[in-house]
Image (cartoon, rainbow, N blue to C red; front, side, top):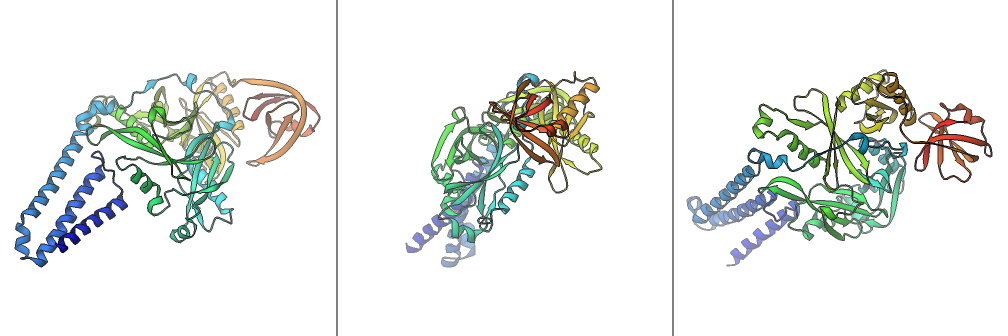
Length: 531
């Protein structure tokens, strides 16, 4: 009897250790749960077989034992049910249901994609943000020996501006042991438009994170609170007050046991206190930007584009099949983050038939018909303009310039630093404009469009004129070019005046009267003319 109790205790202990490490959801829709069941049965059978082999009769009895045969039959049944469930959940049988998981709405480009101020354009990609984050961390001598920067770098909208945010992590297990009492003291916040990088120190440290061990590890913390929930990729965000949260989307399977995944709800976990709240997707707070992972949205659209004429057509004839291009970027619209990617045929002809925007909070999908070059062709075209410098193009951002769909991209040197900017017309990708600043690039691009008869050459951004007295002037050097920043009396705006374009600004002093034509920015305005 005592040996049976010990054997039972061993089974429970091993099952707990497996569960504690692997953290499968107790849910029939979770693949890991089925393997957990198989593991438990195998452990029970292994302990039973060892006892029988060494304490009872011998090897022949082990092979013919009914309990072992029953256990083997149970494992076989689990595998059969899992296999049948996988097949019945697959696109092979349910192509029509997969194709309808998202329903793109065809929209007008110039209506939805407004021309935006330069200070709202995310000029950096994730790789550039990583460089800035590591550089900032390297300057914090009091923290750099204890902490490192996580590679999460979630893209969010924060107070109307595009940002990337990422937490710090413990440098190693020893550093965790000496610092875990107070938690992680800060996170990094990068303005993707201005490249301003801040290390935001917290009054109370982040106590729940991916770099924690044991019960404060964010995945273990969530699993013990929600044992049946199946979580997708977690993201790190901050609310409007700058409080750090983990955004934890909960999977929902719409087709059979394992198929047709979307997101049914989202759990918000305060990274400092560990407190959690859960919301249905429809009720998700506005400040949350990433309930749907970008990779999931891309997969859902690919189901829609490739399965419209059935599964076997998507493999063999491929009639009418469309897919997303290899890569995506993010666009800020209506205080939400949208995933942008081009749509092309499965034949790989390096041209797009249109593009989609997919809302990371709601899954809303918008399709825009626009035939033109796919992103990598446009990147090569931009790189060709500066081939002597051997700059490489970042994945482009979709913009509206003079009512023309335009690829905007940063050009980086071998060290990953942004050196120039390029604009490429989507429909005629041989039209490429390069500039040291975004303003220079746009002006060159608008002139190029006019010269090629694509547009009138007028920038459709609303321009305004103001007359006033210079209250304050400051000079700065950006990308090797001098700029004057001017503030007028009784005006809130800051006017950016590049010296290379308006050299007459050097003759002005504080107290002088000036007339400025500009396009609105918040708070920095782009100057179009001086008088």
